Amino acid sequence: MAAQKINEGLEHLAKAEKYLKTGFLKWKPDYDSAASEYGKAAVAFKNAKQFEQAKDACLREAVAHENNRALFHAAKAYEQAGMMLKEMQKLPEAVQLIEKASMMYLENGTPDTAAMALERAGKLIENVDPEKAVQLYQQTANVFENEERLRQAVELLGKASRLLVRGRRFDEAALSIQKEKNIYKEIENYPTCYKVEFWSPAERTGTGTKRTGTDPREEEHLGKGNPLCVWPTQILAVGTWDRPKKTIAQVLVHLHRNDYVAAERCVRESYSIPGFNGSEDCAALEQLLEGYDQQDQDQVSEVCNSPLFKYMDNDYAKLGLSLVVPGGGIKKKSPATPQAKPDGAAGMAAEEEEDEYSGGLC
Image (cartoon, rainbow, N blue to C red):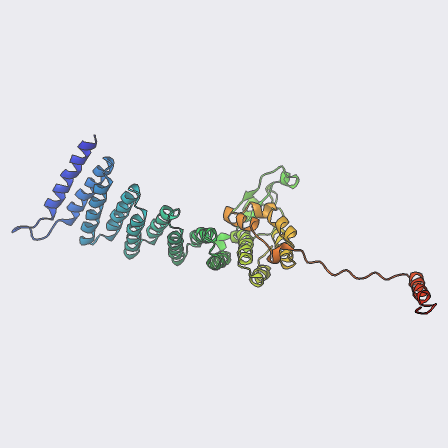
């Protein structure tokens, strides 16, 4: 079977070369037909597990499409060549070809496909070269952001932030998380990002199921007499629920940088987030900062071991568990004030002191 597929691939290569030849009556190569034959050859070699030959066929197909000014198809061929290199465990070379393909997608005016290719490349290289993966995820986020697809952009930035934290690159991680928070803030300004929560009467006792709409005006469609009435809850943008978690992550990163001032400023700025002030997140962060400032390791560990911190993304949860206060974790104690003695005791002490010297020094 494999030999048959290899022979089939070689036949397609021969046909492709024939289409590229010119002569007295054929002045221009037939790039379109040649590219088609190269593509068929690549498929045949891939089925025969001959990935090196399949990669070469894909590259020839890409060149033929480029000569024919078909950038999208050329990019597809380069991407397929990269996938063949992936099968050969040549990941850096594979990523290089996929990056080239993404640039051609952008030139062709298909940024969504370019972003998906870059994200795919990031996933390929993440375990081998996290630094390169961070770069690819950030490039993908930039493409999505330019297309005003902010949800996809913030998701990719989140991946980059987690990789930076995993690599202990806290300065860069703090900036990346700040950019995430800024995008979440921007998302809240879009009317389509708002949700309204509908509750059945049974939910007041905790036995119902929450329904989430996509437009606050759904209340009007349901009518006031509808059993799915709006339970009095604050209607916030979707991003609002994510930003406090990003605040916790950013505070942990700042504290690992030994920058208490930046961590405190981060919490102070988050008071402007609707619903943050007085929330569980706010109280936990204030307690964390208090314990860190007083060098109380027990208080810091208690906060970081709470479910609010432990059930965050794994990389941030580890940050909390490994957080150590400066000064070796010795709790600062306020100096004890000397207790005032009763007047009677003071008088007796004075008398004893007089009696001691009443007989003179001798």
